[in-house]
Image (cartoon, rainbow over all chains, first blue to last red; front, top):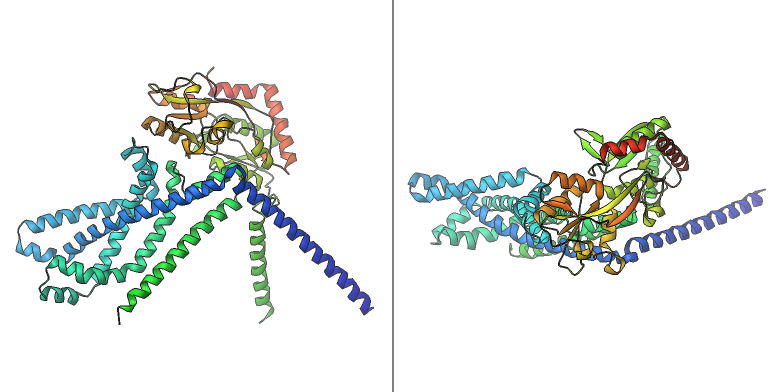
Length: 267
Length: 262
């Protein structure tokens, strides 16, 4: 009786095993077919390569514009915050100029942070640069200007959080305002803002996924184009997701390394 | 650990496993969750006069025909406005019962879904600026000097994106917009030299925008049909039956004439 049951059980396991192997084989075949359809046929992988390149290009150039804009705005705003009151007491033209630029920066920050990036991109494409046919440059400018607003606030937060004594020490050593900023405050600020700045760059990379709205073939659009032709959602979307993920992971690892090196100078 | 916790953990694991399986199956062949009294139609309501929005409501040839089909089948029509490229996939996975969006029958689409009988014929035409150097289809070259605007994932996009030896202009010379209206805006701004789009929406766009004209030639001729999931043969037969009846009653011509003046 027991032997009988055991034998039966063995056959059962064997059959289940075969079924599992069979379904695995079928699944694998299905995977290969889908992969071929989505990436090999019609050389569709070329779109992914093109899109990946454009995504990196847009992110990199927009990141540079963002940092350049951010530094300028952060210096204007934090100078106003730190010295505005003193300058006002002294009177003269200096305060007026500073207040004027500070007001412009505030308007910029309000508008850029108050509207969605995809709307800004469409405005750039269809209204401001309506006659330009270089859609990648339009995307770079739109994302750069957008990122600048966030980077500016990150930098300003960094400058303001450097201890006041550091600034005063620089001034008492005979450095002028700009020298103190460049040699003493900004290097310390950089270390403080690095994690947030890295975060902003990651956000920027992912935000560029809306560039497809204006016809640019970025990574997301490449996936969309494949999806629109093969009608399968899984392969193109997962492939695109994995590529973004890998880029972000590599970038995060690099920043971690940089952070570690910067920390060495603490001792 | 008491029994309840074990049951809870097991059910969470089960749900996760099910979710993963569904993912692995590429969202295909899921059993259809069909609400008996609803007919869910996927469309892209930016394609006048076939489908567009009038205020909050949907209107157009496809929308009206779909309404009559639903009536014949004794169902309530529910319209979902999605991106054109998501329609076939959504119908295939059972998210929508049918797709009706001025959709042409192509071999690629037939691999994923079934199509009903044709209810309208579409002609793809070319819109250019009135002072455009493009005077005929022969002027549309693929040497990189001309850019062509299309609505992403439409047949115009698919044909135009093909290589020149297959009748296209090469992917790099085609700029794909989310809607036909955006392609036309880009044409007006001079970002593209021509827009390839269906004849009827083309007429609406040219009527609404000064300085544009339609080339007097057919870029491609196509048959419009409704797509239904492969396994849903019952609905397909129902739709075909309803279309045949509507055709016989002259309702389809009536609707098309209402939107397309002579």
